[in-house]
Image (cartoon, rainbow, N blue to C red; front, side):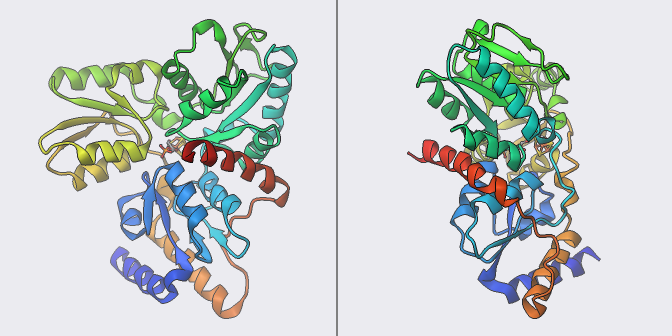
Length: 350
Ligand code: 13P
Ligand code: SF4
């Protein structure tokens, strides 16, 4: 059944040629990664999508990533996602109304001008608010650089939605504890710390996949393999990141292990489908997951779903009927969300 599906995907993809492109995030299941035109972390995917001229982008990832491809896309391009229900619970911890409410509260009390920095794992509406206020999007590969950009200008930063990426970034930048304020996700939006003198305000959203990794996981692998290199994603808890040798985006995890010598030993703290795939790809290194933690939303994109999306493009080109699986960011959010995304690209690429 799956074999027939894969052959059909290849056949339609061949027929459509350059008109269609398939980007995939590193967490996609191996069958999808094998069919993708390019694979990457959120930053690499956003950049590559902004550079392609293909008419149809079938994005294999979660919906905020497909939204980014649409926001940065050219007017003639259409973006599809094989399963629109493929969301990100972390992104859902803050919406446009809440980010504006918290920002207003912080801005009214803080002695510095506050700039929003929003993790790419957020809705188009939240990115739009960020762009409207002159802030920037960030990803796990550049959160420190983006945050520092504003702090160096004497601004305070409101970082959302991932608390762990925020606090791990604060540690990297050596921001002292008195300057860090945690904004609680309760109805009253309580904060810890002094808002007036704060420089980094962090929303307390989290990713359930990365919250699973514990200190005990790291210690247990270190106990068994004294020469092990522990590499984790910065969405992991602070104590896990502190005990690891490297914390980085999925692309950097991939690159680090790729350049590592044969025989080296690795413990990896991120999504399991990705760890399983690199274990097979780099079979001469010893690679182990800290534990098997799966992002169920990423796993919703199956070969059957991808085939349906390709069939939808093919039918659309023949009949000009409805294009199923298209993702369209409301025009009202597009312009400002694009500003926040382009700001990130400008800071990183300069
Ligand atoms: P990366 O940008 O590192 O690929 O991370 C995206 C993500 O969703 C991690 O959970
Ligand atoms: Fe969202 Fe976590 Fe899945 Fe990444 S791993 S897409 S942050 S739920």
